[in-house]
Structures are given as C-alpha cells and as structure tokens.
Length: 505
Image (cartoon, rainbow, N blue to C red):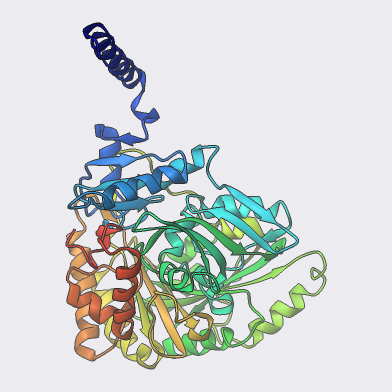
C-alpha cells in the first residue's frame, strides 16, 4: 500500500467515525434502541410495587424480535454474561422484572413498531396470534371485532400477555377454563441462549411447558397463540353477602362444581362503607344500616361472593329464569344482594386503567398472593380472617378470595399449586404511602408465620422469596425439573434475575 492510499484509508475511517458520531448526536434518547439516560434507567428500576429498586446498566427498546435475540446472544458471548430482564407493564410488586447492572428489555416498545406481532385473529381456526408485548385489553378489543374472545382472564386487563403467561393468569373464569396458561396453543420464545424457538405441546414441549408459569426463567415470550370462543354480549352480575364462613365456602365450592356460572370470585368485606360504595354501580333491596349492623355483629367482617352469568341475544329470553334458579341454590343473607347488567366488555374492563406513568410514584403495593389447600381453609379463616386481619384494621385494602379446581391446571407447566382437588386463592391487595409499606410487610409476615406454625402448606402466587432454600421448598417435587429446564434453556442464568431463583439479584 502506498503512503497516499494509506492516508486516504485513514481519512475514510475518520469520516465514517465522524458520520456515526453525528447520527448518534442527532438521535433523541427515545430513538435509540439501547438507552442509559436517566429517564430510561429510572423507569426500568421502578415497578407497581414501588418497594424494590434495582439499577440496570441500560435499557433496550426493541423495534423487532431480532433486537432481543441479538442482546441475549451478546450476553452469551461475554464472560461473565450480563443479565437480561424482560419487562411488560411493570406490574411486578417486588422487583421481579428488574436487574442490577444488567439490561432491562422494555417489551412494550415492540408494540410501537411495525415489526411487532400485534393481534392477529384467525376466526375460522378459533385462535389469535398475539405479541407478548400486547395488553389483554387490546386482545379483548381486537377479538370482539370478530365476535370472539379468550375464555380465561385476569381481573386487570392492562397487563402484558407475556407477563401474565409467565405467571399463570387467573380470575373468576379459571375454575371453569383453567388459568390463562392452560389456554395457549403455541408460543414463540427467545431462550436464554438467544435461540428463537416455536413451541407447543407437540413441538419442543419441554420449553412450552417450562415457559408457561415459568417466571421468565427459561425464555422471553414474543408471541402466544390464544384459544378463542364465541363471545357473549352481556352479563348478569351479582354480589352476595355472607356472615358465616362455612356457608360461604360451601356455596363457592358448589358454584365451581357446576357449569351454570361463568365467573365466581369472592371478597372479604372489612370496611362497613364498602357495600355503600357498591350502590353507585349495583342496585340492591338492602338497607345500608342493616348491613352495617350485621357487619358490627360479626366482629367487623363479612364475606361476599361475586357471581356472573353471560348471555347474548339468543339466550336473553331465558337468562333471568336461569339466574334466579342459580341464586335459589345459595344461602347468602336474605336481601343482601347487589345486582347489575352490563356489556361483556364493560364487565371484563371493570377495573379500568389504573396505571400511573408519572414518576416518582406516590404509593406502594406490598401485595401478598396465596394458594391455600381446601382441607385447611377453616383453620386459615380462624387464624387469619377472624384474628389477624381485624387486628390490622386496614381501611383501603382489597382482599379477594375464591376457590379453583386443580383439574383445570396442567401439572406439566412450571406454575405451582397445592396438591388438592380444590384450593383457594387469596389476594391481599394492599396500598400504602410510598415509604410506608413496612407495617404491611409485617402483617404479611404474620400470616406466613401463622401458616408455617399451623402446618398449612400454602403456595405463593406471584412468589417472592429471598433464599434458594425457600424456592426449593416452594417448588417441592418440581424443583428437579425446574433445574433441568434452566440448564437446558438458560445455562448461563441470564434471564429474569429479579426473581432471585438462580441469581442473588
């Protein structure tokens, strides 16, 4: 090479470098796929719980699935690898979608790109192909345009599909149709090795069953094929009050043993004003002062069943008779019934959008979600519902409580439930000031301590454990297969470190 040609080559390299610098300088932070500006970092180190805050090194805003594949492959090529946490809407409550010093993947960024999967409805085949970044509210809207809908939901629809399928996804329909993970036909997954794999019960089944309920440990869901059925148009919706726990659970278990209702949940009523608030949306023949008297006579605690039956134009003529027949089989307090009739969409979207994009967050949500074996539910009521909860006297918590059928769950999946035919889910949905959650954490600890001492083998849903031994106990007989799947699909332990199963952070 002559001196002149060498100089030209050097000048060319300088020019290319200068062009790259100029391009970078002209990009706003939101245009860069990999960001480490303060706004991106702060958002990635927050979640709905607003309790745990882990600081990542950077945040990926993917415009395509290939961006995520390249990131995971890049981690695998390093020694040591960096960790990767996929984040949907950030509704974890204990930092499960965070990573200290690693990279957070903002999955919702895919929805802002033409390369995202979106929602594609295949009416004749009865399914929808849905991007893992999509929200369930958008799945509902898209499928209803075709007169179809998924059969299993969560109470809150502004959650990502990939997020709920990584846990289980439960609501009042789960007794009949199982959790959301039981209503998936196929997945596209990016494994911890950076491999893009399509899987189902028949194709790559180990990955399919591992990822569903797998807490993000084995892969990142980029597409899910969701089962669809004909959608109803309206619902009959009631809330029924009980003062006796045994009567409540007998009626709940009766309801989930038959196929007459489409949705069964329940509540603990710990505030005498709760039922008065219901009157803005429900009609009731009851007198509020009578409910308050019953509430006080029952030591400040009542129970409620929430019951729904779907209908459409074809069944509109018979729905009232069918619903009345169903109510006659139940033993709620006479007259203590709250009822309404709304569209199917309005019922599923009853909670609305509660997300707050503004930072800093002003509230914390130290939630505790449990699965409780039916055989010990009476002991749990005596030790927790009638003792610990009234002593705590929390005015703003929402306590959801209802039974599920084990036969509607697929044990090959990674999710963990009690080993009984019927078990109950309890969601203690607390709200506190941003730095005032410690008192509620002590309350949650009291409940877990009571269960431990009483020998009630509860399982945490949306689990939060601090030690590997706790995780081994949580998984029980499934622990060996969880370890096997981790070794198969994420041997370098790159994915989802915030769960603290295989990573300390």
